[in-house]
Amino acid sequence: MPYRDIFVHLDDCRSCPDRIDAAISLASRQNARLTGVALALESTIASYIGIEFPSALSEQQQKVVREAAERAVAHFEEKVKQAGLEFESHIVSCGAPKAPAVLSYYARHADIAFMGQPNPKDAAGSFQETLLEGVLFASGRPVYIVPYIGRPHYKIRKAVIAWDGGRKAARAVHDAIPLLRGRGEAIVLVVNPDERKDVHGEKPGRYMAEHLRRHDIDARVDIMVAPEASPDTVLLNYVADVGADLLIMGAYGHSRLRERAFGGVTNTILHHMTTPVLMSE
Image (cartoon, rainbow, N blue to C red; front, side, top):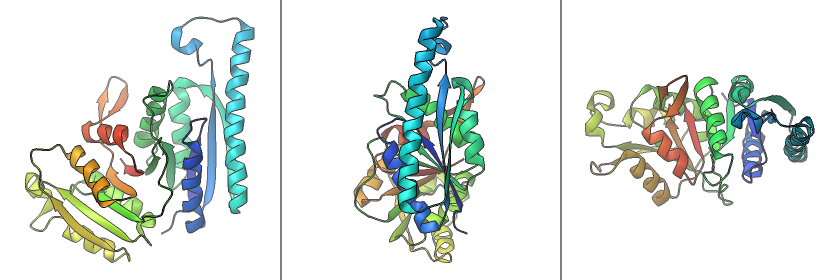
């Protein structure tokens, strides 16, 4: 079943135009409707440092935030209109603590969500990560993450599936099927299968590749044995070596006091990815 509703988070990050272009490209292929949402955060300074500012300063700050959201929405609308696609857009005013829930709400009513990779050099990088965590773990939808360095401008159409035999990886593959159809190749990558014999069986990756082929997806299996290297390092190196333009994997996290945090492999991929990643939780 193709995607019919696509959600895009809009902001003033440099990578946002690439995020919009990626969503439009997919929507054009899938005949999907796009929903773009920008946040106009309230009291973004005061809420973090606990100081009450003069009303004039607060009003000026809100004006700047609102204008940034309006620019992001205007760019989105212009690009979508040029593509001739159905769309709607929203600017939502809310406090920073409620922002992840707001984006999750809109993402929950779509088939897939487009978000940006947090940029560690950006002053808002930590907040971007919080938003991404919220949508990944609370929306119940797959998330297509666009690198902050942008996407390749040439068409590769090759995907790598990080297959560990588990539930979250299976969920990610299922969610990615509309993306995988029509691609040149999908590689089911199994790393150190002997460490998970109970879930991989006698022929690791074989049945997943067969399953994908029944969906008219050109799939093959590749097995990497590198017990001395961490799985995240193997994944990143493999994606670069084969020249893939998409990585598909399950999103793993662990609980901490009243919030979620990314697990080891997921955290490394998110902070070092240079190609788009689709994750499902």
